Amino acid sequence: MKHFNEKEWQMFRRGEYSQEESRFMEEHLRGCQQCLNAFLNSIDEEDLLQAQEAIPPDFTDTVINMIDRKRHAAVPPKGSGRWAKKSQNLLVYYAAAAVLTIALMGGGAFQTFVKGYSHVADTTKLNSPKIEQKLDIQFSKKIVDHTHQLIIRFENQEQEEENDEQQK
Image (cartoon, rainbow, N blue to C red):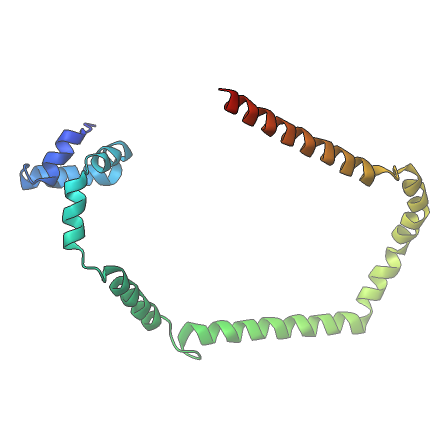
């Protein structure tokens, strides 16, 4: 694939190529990051001044207003089309979840589950004091001390760098 340089892109902008060559360069520009960078680098002050003269001062406001109008036109009113269907489907989903929860609670499924796994809770209660005894009580204090020392090192390092720069 042939890449173009800044001079060729300047000639392209000035319209010095045929329509066929210009179309080829435009297509190439869309897919080639290297040539896009070369094209952008070829833009000079004169081009910027021409662009400023061509673009009206209220361009940004006009575009934003157009986008707002399109956005408001694209949102369907509530209760119409797919919005209504989505809200109905959501209502059905929540109703089904509520009915299922009430049925399981009334049938005792949750109670059976809790009774079946109550031995897990008892095991945890027995092991809890053993775990607490193994934990280092000063753990949080150690973290704070180490963090404080790290901050002091950073501050000292910054001061040393500033002193080195001032001496140069």
